[in-house]
Image 1 (cartoon, rainbow, N blue to C red):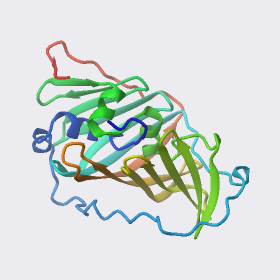
Image 2 (cartoon, rainbow, N blue to C red):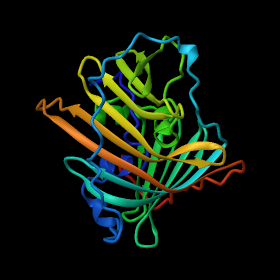
Image 3 (cartoon, rainbow, N blue to C red):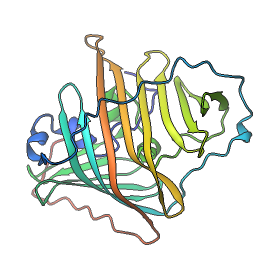
Amino acid sequence: MSNSITIGLVAMSLLWFSACHKQRTSKSINKNPAADTTLINTIPPAADTVKATEPEPIGSIEIKEIDFDYLVAKSKVSFKSKTQDFDNTNVNIRMKKDSIIWLSVTGVGFEVARGIITPDSIVFMDKIHKDYFVFSYQQLSKQYNFDLNFPLLQSVIIGNLPFPKGDGGRFVKENDSYVLKQVKDSLQIDNYLSEENFKLSRIKATEIPTQNTFTLDYQDYKVVKTFLFPFTSLINLNVRSQKDQQINETNMRIKHNKVDFINENPGFPFNIPSSYKRKR
């Protein structure tokens, strides 16, 4: 098992869809034929072949990050893998910084699933089949052949650095981007910053022993309160199967329709009925 790469692939309802429900979930979600069905596997190729210049001092670049108490958002999630394929699933998101990610998945006018992600665990309720699932990050890391954690799940939504800027990181200049290069254990992370606004435009993480890769592209930045916020995130994961050594590709798109930062607690209701059965 690869245990030294950290990714945010399952930041949202993907955790529930692909890890728990296999094929049955996609049958429960309404697919609106009028909705945007743009293929999510049109993620731009990684800028791997650009020759970098000499490193710049790490203190010379100020990264524009988002500071907030609470976030609320209405979003659509699309997902495509070897076994799953669904478009524009409605997801309501509430967050408390560094503490809670709360998700509500809706179908034809009613809630079909609810999840809560904390730094310790991930719990999802399937309200259609009346069961629930409890995951540790260690369990999901084993399943996805990656090591997951809460900070990177949060960064997928917010667009902040998943790892602090210091700790030996260095900047290089590549075309119209500054790239913060970091190494965490056996994980190599390239954080691409736009020269125009010093916001993250891409994160690429590569596990050195396996060459498994995770790429996250941030697009469609808009001003929310006083912050630039990415309204679209495109996620690509390429992992070599331990069984047959084939490369398995997974793509995910998170598209926010509405985002707001608030100071008051929006509430994170999560109560599992006693009649629900635990599946994992």
